[in-house]
Length: 221
Image: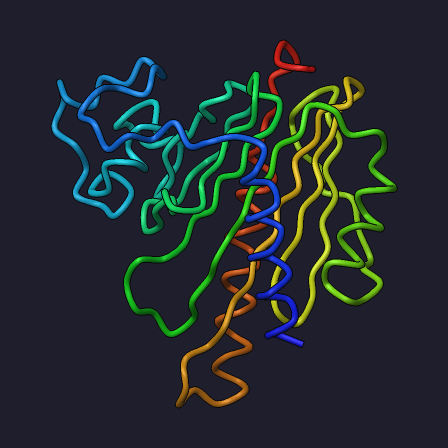
């Protein structure tokens, strides 16, 4: 099951990668998010120690403990980004006219539980039901989504989980949509109980990121 899901995620990223090219060029210039990180001392955390990831972060001040505000390069959404993860520049993609964007991020350091996350933005999705069917097909099982209450008005958020990860679906009435999905895997040597505890903790962290996502309606396609 895990191998099939990993292959599906890789294929999805590669397919979407054909729609556009990364805007990351490894330069020292700001990403255009009004990032003033070069003026103030940067936090000594993974997210700011990675140049490409730093381009997405709008401030050196955390929005809550352990998280910094990320603004997509398309300008289509924001989310609370964890300080101990970085964006994978090799898989990042932004589509023509900013109508889609893929932001993959992961833990760069060895951990007892390794999580890999992909956030996909679309400005042209027909319905959330078709997306749920697509996600179920992608993961090879019927997913049960439940509502996640957020403080964002005019936006809908749902959540599902599998043995291998967490999924989120966020949309609004302007046909904008974000599909959030993650995979996790415990390192060898952990027993089932230890692994289960780590997964429960990671699930809550990922749910908090999903709840923090806010679409910008002005970017509807």
